Image (cartoon, rainbow, N blue to C red; front, side):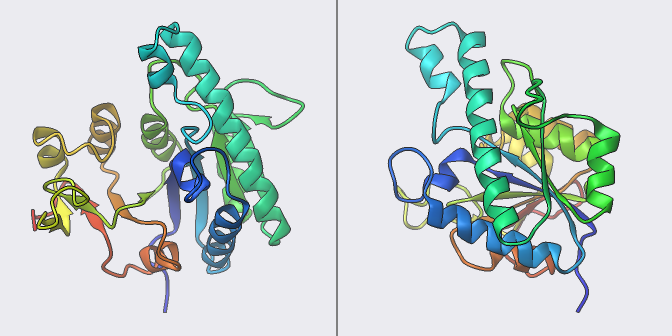
Length: 242
């Protein structure tokens, strides 16, 4: 059976890498993600990754405590590079060729972000991990994911979280909360469902890039998503609300 997508951007939160730890990186969680990514790449899908840094440093939280917001955001960008390098190491130990590209120059550690080079890596079957966000403060890594997806002509964004989709209320607080199987961009924005920030949603809407939100903690879900199985919640311009 063929895959549903040719080129995918996978958005991972920093928190996803720490598993049940309160801080940092859980090597077993990273290893599991690397194995799943390897299985997907083996099917011929071109995969790029944007990773957050919230498991190490959250700029918004530091700014609310009094730190200069731009400074806090730059520190957060550096945290994403730490996560990107950790993912790269794990992927390459599973046999997956990987390149890290950063929006802030760190030539001793990674390539600078160059759009054409990133696309060429993808065409050669390499995984490309985008670190350091967009290189600009005041923007989230969700917005970076939407921006990079548009730049590399990704067909879809996989937003891998700890929840199995988008709900009309917090399922951890309200057990009877309803999970949507599909939503429009407009509904997500109007209802402020917070699956991604509004700038990211607007970018996806403008470039007609669907977003699939699903549970990363379920083994095999990345592969299921690539194969087009019905998991999580799909956000798109032509989706019916259901």
